[in-house]
Length: 417
Image 1 (spheres, rainbow, N blue to C red):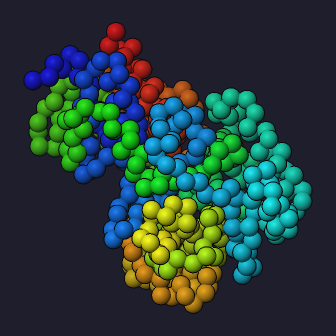
Image 2: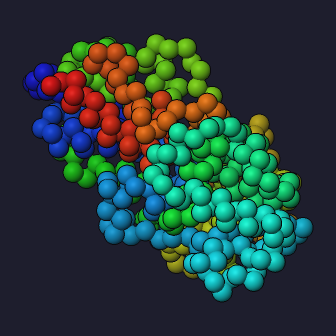
Image 3: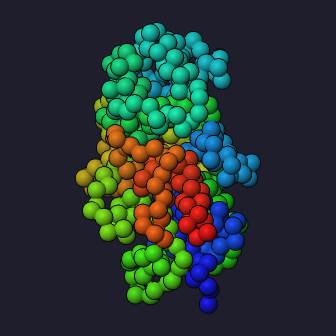
């Protein structure tokens, strides 16, 4: 039997838990990761039906994430970037806006796209320049308001906010009212300005799988749900007691609150993602396609197989559709409503696109309205021997999941010295 004096139990096999496990194992501790579901990755999952790769919700890896650069092997992930910019649906037409430094050939199209005034574009350039200066952590020490209030204070027109920021940033935070913290907006703009939005060639699930590659056999147990947590171990749903010298809770916020015995305060933001398949066509764009019209269910559409051909079988394209929230419609009604809008956008051919799957994700993200915690300074230990990592007390996202995982490992090591 393992010596519980040196065993740390990590509850949750997502990005934060796996990162924490790697750092603890590197310092010679024994680690047991307990994951309630049947697979690791937390909210980062990829299904593979009939040669397609379906990520649970539209997700990307921002290559500028500093912690991801340290923890991951980008070459092994075979990252495939989206084109820098977006295609926006306005007034029944599509307009492409692109980063003028990385896509100078699209400069004229970008300047003439009806997303706002020349003044709006200059304000965006100034804002982008400002957020990339200084240390990343300094963003989370700035005065805080909502993103909408920040944009209005910066002088952006209502047209620019409605046609660009709401579909773009609303899609990132899954909130059409963009009530997320102004710090989060600054952080997101910095990541887009300094890196690329990319997909691992074989799906987003390759990220947690890579983190788990170096973990010893038997370190991770899936299909194991923890009923209760104490400083000296955990109790499983079947009543089994597992002793430990420390316990790290690395679950989503609602489950973390349950395990800590706290009132359930976490506000969940939902997302619905529908996938369709169609014949591959030359016009399928390598951009995120945004709804700048503000009507209909669709917030954005993406063609992942254009970015990575491994997302679909030869000759086929994968189409991902994101709907903010989780509508009450039946699956059949939801599919029909989305399909009608796809036909409006892309023509009658979309009527025959094959529906693959619909994912209704009730807890896609926690609410990120102010006040938000400083993710660079998490409070890892909640009581002697019990630690938390992940979005609870931090912010959601791959970058901060990895940071909190590492910092929780450091806090455990300091506690055990």
